[in-house]
Image 1: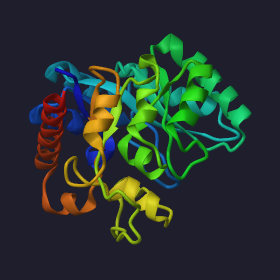
Image 2: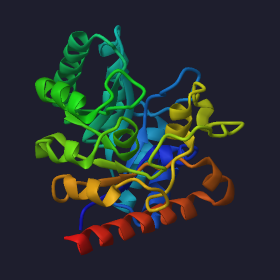
Image 3: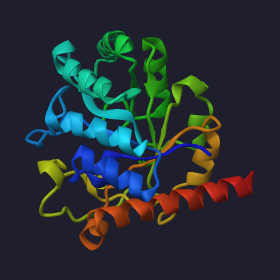
Length: 283
């Protein structure tokens, strides 16, 4: 049985201790935890090591058997350095995380590679590996671009079904990766083509911003549950190394307006299990 996790973005309004409890009750194996705010003005959970919330999260991990595999999220821009990533690394290490998710926002590819290498070196003593996520509206858009940078820096790649699709990628891009470059595969669904219009909710979780673009809105609050769109998810899972952990990252504002957190978590887990049954049948 491959591990299945619940990404924090799916239920970002839940603080990390409650996320752990919800994931455990729904039947997940692991969670991802946001320990650093992503957008300007976004509220940040107080997850520094030794804080009451960090200690409570650690306690609930121990009580439930759930683990934190990844923490997020760090943007690697032109001026990003140790002062930006050390708090997130320390917060992740306190939770026993294995990876820290990053995105390349620096358009200078050489400088970005140097920054990623420096982060990788600082993360290693804490047992963490940076995973560079190619994002369709950022300078590092595609899986091959992220793989080249990650392999040189000693990092890994965070493959996200939405951004593979929106950047024009295919499962073959994932199949071409060395197994050690793929520690996790994030799943969601959606239409094959980028929507022409998406309604932005009046309020985003934690004061997160969507910056007005369709792709930002879709990525942060308008994804669909696995099996409810047209992405070639069975092929994508089959293309990943055998046993690759899967994480449901499905922020869906409309679903959150109808269902409570536990129901949303359970709904997404059933959908991932159904996908895996399809993959196994195809095999």
